Image 1 (cartoon, helix red, strand yellow):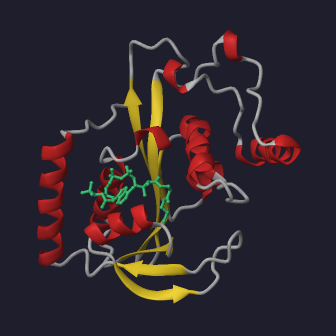
Image 2 (cartoon, helix red, strand yellow):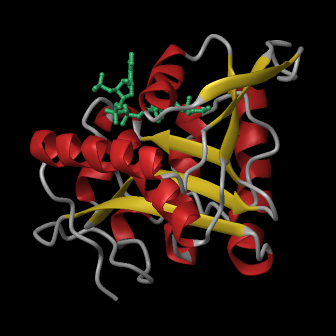
Image 3 (cartoon, protein in one colour):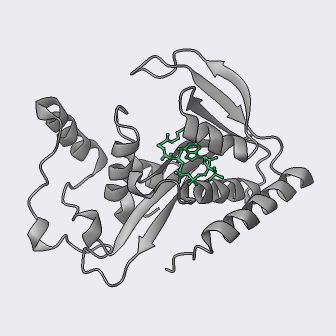
Length: 222
Ligand SMILES: CC(C)(COP(=O)(O)OP(=O)(O)OC[C@H]1O[C@@H](n2cnc3c(N)ncnc32)[C@H](O)[C@@H]1OP(=O)(O)O)[C@@H](O)C(=O)NCCC(=O)NCCS
């Protein structure tokens, strides 16, 4: 993830975690948190004439987009802009030359890698992108020599729980009433040793299946 990705990442965060407050301070995460690593999946569409990386938004969309949700929603939107650096001037998704489809954040702690966030743009779910992000996060942790990967997940989040189960996460415990919006419990999930031959073989098999099903996703240049 680059600084220029942040407005789009925040857009995906907003639609994925509508009750999340405050929004993640991505700029601080990227620039100041040495533990943090963020990966994005970007769809590159050179034929589009929308905003290029680092360029100004085209004149047609200079005005801030109206925000939904009445006065409270608008106030939250404005606060998000101040806190998160969301410039509110993103062109519509179909006009962007690069569209952020999803992202994952990992903190490499002393004894474990912790997934702090993972989300896929609503319009692009169930196309293997969440899985691709999770694979990238696990491989990052393996390269850093981390023995385990952990995360928290709402007990009701069936899509995410199914994804984690597929990649060998198991329930380690429960944090009661962990989420402040609904007071829902969080499951604490962990992998077995990422560095064991057994886990590595299972991951290779899942990667092969993912590639066969969804094709090769190229790494972004530059
Ligand atoms: C969880 C999330 C990241 C999955 O992303 P995705 O790109 O749609 O997932 P993929 O297409 O890669 O699916 C991979 C696996 O996840 C599981 N999965 C994903 N969506 C699912 C759904 N709607 N129902 C059941 N299982 C689902 C399946 O195990 C799937 O494997 P399969 O295709 O072999 O069945 C996405 O739903 C999302 O962004 N949700 C909102 C944010 C969120 O809840 N993040 C997790 C916080 S803990």
